[in-house]
Image 1 (cartoon, one colour):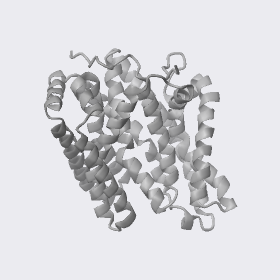
Image 2: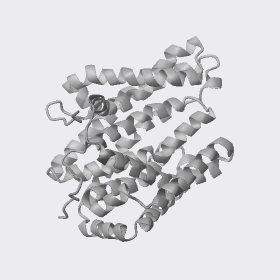
Image 3: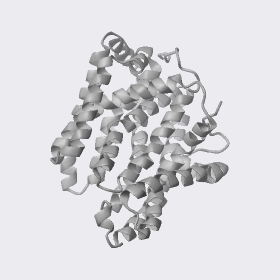
Image 4: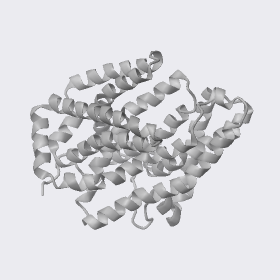
Length: 368
């Protein structure tokens, strides 16, 4: 079996853990921005959709390659599915029904639909879609693990033609997005919007997951992530500006979506590159960074009912969208952060239900 890249691959890369936690936690801010149809809020959402989960899935693929080589296949699958599917089941059984109740009651409040988006309760289970995607990537992980020659060949190509490699990823992401977008329209017609969304997300992000897997195993791929051609950053900046400008000024939804699909793969790669460079340069992890990373799973799983619950409490005071963003985002983050630190991590049952981990054997980020 091919050996993983050696340079810069210690047993624990604290920066990767810190960034994985930060990228998950940032979802709370993004979904606070989804409260209203204000242009600035739409731009926050769009900026996140351009790059946040690309970096997250690349890190996930990197860690999958790291961990799969340390365990028996059956043990790795069991651990992986427990970590993903137990919190998913809890979220669907508890967080989603609570979110439905809160949004249904909020929608009855006078003027609510004028100030805030008419959220559809059925949509809010989809903030946990990444757990389904990662579960579906379990067989992909084994398939990638078995492809030593192809992964090595990809590494050699990346070393010789770095710009062409990034262009290939860009075209693959764009092609997948357009193809699944077209297929998704048929699913929308028959009322399967959630399936269309899952199909689009899991198909697109598998390229970044595979990139992260290859980056752990082949030094040339990691070098490409850490030091891509400068033209990649320049193109990414230009397309990001174009995409955000489109959100602000273009009314045609199809044209905006096309611009987004064109921009997303290259912007996602460029930001992922910066994330990896930051992660590998981090030599020390502060306690608050470690705690936030370890709490991020809990925060993400529960943040939607937390946001809605705080809005339900504050809306009668006449709070507007800007004030709601300024108040609800930090308050929800602090509540869930301390809930994890003071309650979840001290309870074996809650740690299993909300994080899919067993207290006696869990690995956490350790501050230095």
